[in-house]
Image (tube, rainbow, N blue to C red; front, side, top):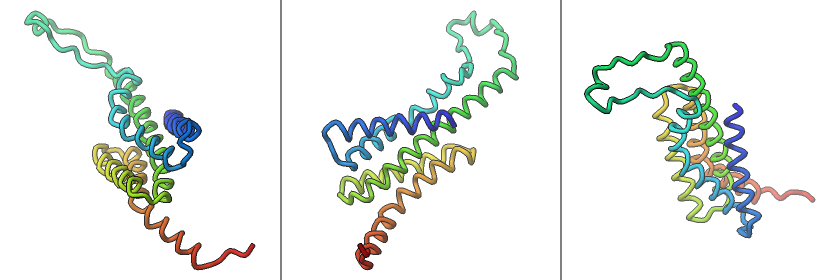
Length: 170
């Protein structure tokens, strides 16, 4: 959970930096945050393996290494590290999904062709990426971000039509 909050705050900080750096548009900040998510989300698995300190098998370099029988690390220690790495992965995927879902709403409200294309790429990326993970706790945020990306233009259009039909009393 901590890793997810950290991931979402880093993406939000990058978007805020972009918005105050002269771009000025919320869509530009959302696009930069979405771009960061798209570029760095494939790197989450190797990062998690290093953060969780999951032991990797040593590959033999010579024929003498093939014959030598190295002792295996304790099974409980490996299991504990894998569980920790899986928790990191769940947090990273959740944080990326939160950052992407918040960007998708802003991109849908922008309505430009480039924003809609980026929205479609985000939705497809998260929907396809969800197939890679067998655990529901890792699939759920990715599928939610993907479905939000597909539904965002329709919801934005519905809100715009509702506001245009009923005038707000002031």
